Length: 111
Length: 116
Image (tube, rainbow over all chains, first blue to last red; front, side, top):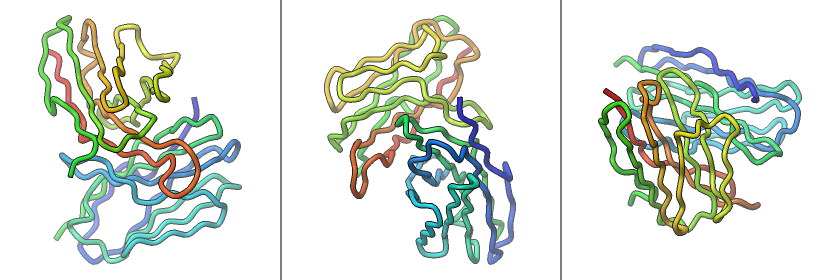
């Protein structure tokens, strides 16, 4: 069983604050790292798919970086808004073609 | 617009009473997955289908079975639910391969199972 860890487990920030959280994963047998956003009562939705060391992806105020050599990815949210409140899951996809999820970071943005 | 639909969204059952959860997709994806997520834990893969090929995780209890009668539908059967089976069950699909969109999971909204 592969270990994928996310930190922090939960986070409360004020509207307008910027925030970031971490996903750690094994640095061997890497194929891709996915970030998913899961709002309450909705389906988890793909945010980013990252495959190359040094990848940086951006979607609006949200961005992510990837370091496959040391086995971590950061997700950044600039100027958090209440609609950013969700659980953010990362998933490691290895060469064995199976996804391993972290426990998620639950973000609450306080208006 | 929903592309992966799970039913029911909420299921309450009694200890030992069989339950079936369903998942349907309109994406024509060849891979379908069932994940179990308990509170504050990572989603755990129970099994997945690559087309009709069934792949069971080694630690998935025998109590859990699955069927995929065609590309669009997949079912999770819990033969004798115990209290420890209370969880959110997520169905996901993906298109295996290369290129944009390959291997990205599309999830349903989940089925939350309560066992009394």
